[in-house]
Length: 164
Image (cartoon, rainbow, N blue to C red; front, top):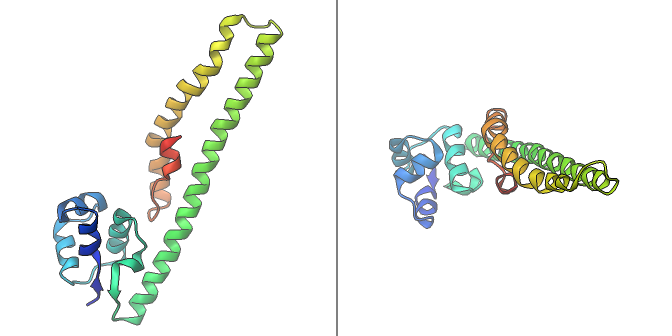
């Protein structure tokens, strides 16, 4: 049996066991058992660590089995690697949106100054930065994030993508 800090970390956030169960996607009874000292699978522990936003090793006071301790370290390493890959993909999409926006802005300025488009063409710039930003955020949450969740199950959505 491995001793954990899960109850302390949960209470520090002001969460009930039910809230932790909801945030982590783990059954409430499983949360109760783990806090009482029962062993849990590494997948369950990883889900709880993600919900509490701590590394897996931070959940444990002590680990009785050397093999389990090594597995926890490997899980933390996999989680970090998946998070780094997910963040790089998220940033790539964000940079793509911004790069296209800069091109649209410059093209609109050039076309407006050369008289190719009327003065109404100036509305293209705010339409892109406001309207397409909303569309980008929607597509990111509906299409891209679920695919990244499936590909990198140990990672969390990037805070930067949620704000962009």
